[in-house]
Length: 260
Image 1 (cartoon, rainbow, N blue to C red):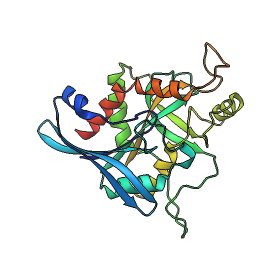
Image 2 (cartoon, one colour):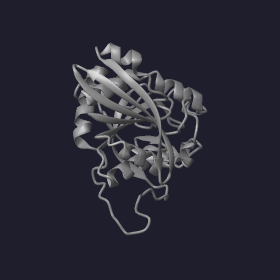
Image 3 (tube, one colour):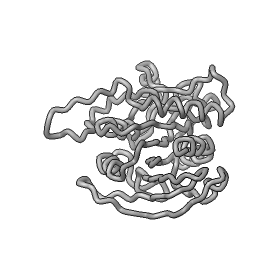
Image 4 (cartoon, one colour):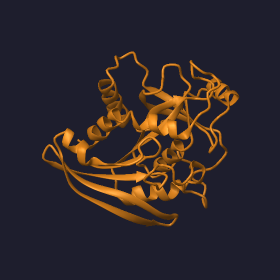
């Protein structure tokens, strides 16, 4: 397996040395490379792993191109460069890790779930096909085989029964500002369960390249106006990032399941 993993606020860095030991594996080598693409240079961290006697490779991309997760702002990310770099690394699949603001009452902060659908009303095109009319089906935007596997892992890792909702609709916002209360109310009315500023753009491009893609979403905070204890609470990026990175055990379980 050659797995691509994309992290952002929800997975700032990829330190495998301790995690691989926890599953009885071995980290063979780590390489930092910079991939030249027609859209710009992309930094990747490449790992060769031994898990249960078999070698696998993991290619990690920090979507903000920063070890702190606070580099390129979300509205300036060159997703075409990022997904091209993943594709040219010959990954078999991409697992995206996202920090989201929760709207659905069943998606309280700390819970880790999956994207089942997305809604993008930003009006900003994201495509490799700027010169010729090419229309890509995204009826099922995320790889269902991956989602079935990941759902099982997330239920087990979080001790959820079969009735616990684990698939939600991601609403793409333009950013970099967080949403207003009125926007969140409108988003919920139109079917959004969570809000974020990046992931669907990756999913679209992966779909155009026939790259299997799934998104693991960490509920890092209640969306604006949805905190039961304080409906007027201001959202803070540092707090959001800290909450997301405190809930990585289920994410690591997903990564190692995909590799093995």
